[in-house]
Length: 396
Image (cartoon, rainbow, N blue to C red; front, side, top):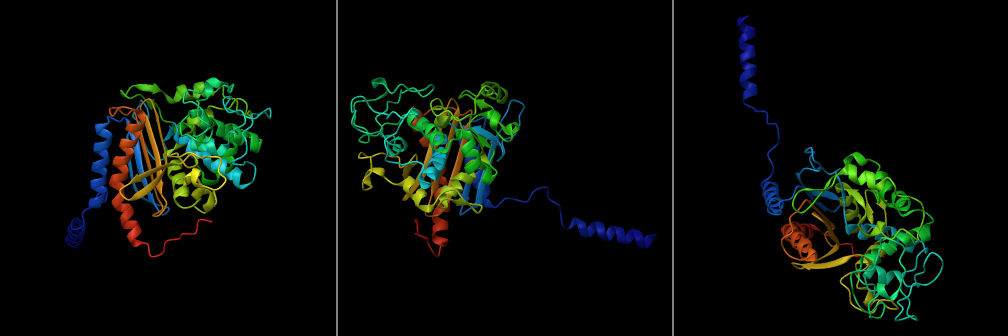
């Protein structure tokens, strides 16, 4: 018995020399990043949000903040948010697939579902094109209605010639959904689910009731932290959505109606940062991704003649010696950004839900938070670029 007791004591002493920790200690850089983003969310009084940085197809960093619902459900990578105007960038992936297939032409005159050409009444001989819609140079007014079938009257357009002047208008984004339905013969949601979301296992849909897993849907919180819309409210409102191919009526869905998981945003940003491919799935050709980034007015034969900060639904953002591409979105207290840097194959997702707005205009607010994020991430980009021994410049 004394021998057994001595052996037991020896085991206790041996095990005590190797303390068990519930969680591995984070590297210093990661702890510093956590502290930075914790301050960012706290300063904006954000209810729930997330940051994900992906480098070369591998997740470099992730930070999840707060709650997604009234009962305190934590935000995770599977949490689904309504992403406002980031919808336009993601819908553009489907549009460019159809361009690659020859089913859509960037410079052909846009037509209504009845075959009648869409025209600015002030310039009846000038065509309005898909390239113009994706660069926001159609001459459509920001106030142009997209909640119903447009009348395309002079009340929809300004006095500039189509293609010659940049003016951001939500209806330009609404046109994309209608064109996808015209070209594919499927509803917008059915096409994007089959050709973009399902191949990557992404929980996303243009109506909350169509989500593969609606249980992951987050509330939307207003800028004062109160509930703007609960998950149940979204599901109740979307229950009446008619998911049929109806290009004459679906001008709202591709403006800002996409619901998508944080992980889904990461995967699609990663695809764009890696020239159209992610997890072995080729969503777009490298040439299409490159074309989305380019100044459309600089291309021979382009129907866009005026400068725009957008390529094809892709905003160009210069910061600290790098050009980032992507889109931003804001609605009530929701702020969403998806940007990528193609040289280093870096993509960044930022979601802030129930976030206070203090900078002034919506665009300045969204840009300010993304700039803070990208400024913090830029040293990681520089490090990645310095480690690259071969840079693939083949965009064809």
